[in-house]
Image (cartoon, rainbow, N blue to C red; front, side, top):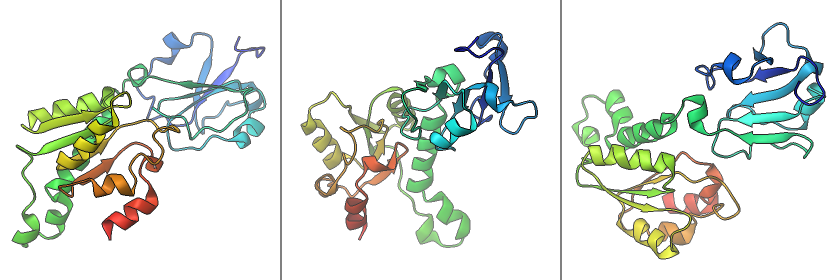
Length: 232
């Protein structure tokens, strides 16, 4: 039993995120349904499995009156806004076998942006547009050196790039050095009161090389107003 619910159900709202999870072994005795499946009994739903596609608010508690747990396969859980009566669990990515998906995507964005791949596809005869920037020898600044940041560093070193890093526990001066020296900056921090607005106008002004900036973390880590000012 989950809570006081006999034969509880869990609804997986984003099957793609959890496609490789062996639910029978992980959750014995619990019926796991994918969003839209027949057989879902709203009153027996005790848990939700989510990624980032849905914002989970009180409307889900109204739909599932016995909801006890929401588990999210994300680094941050700011997309889940529920009363304290519902427990929010942050799953580590290795539990859903998505260890490198975000960092691979981020490095794919890096290559696409720096090498001008989208522009090249649409302008195959424009040699000026085709001239992207060679990654070898360039400096990648990684803001947030957890699992995703460490993956990015490995990918960058495979391309013979220089890597400098900043993590939350580091002295702020290290961030300023990174901003000044990086050709490309990639952000991999969870959203918190400490990291909200971390990159503001002052930080953009410190970017000595006018770097490419890639943020696959939450948008509020970069001040929207500062970003708009910086790109003008």
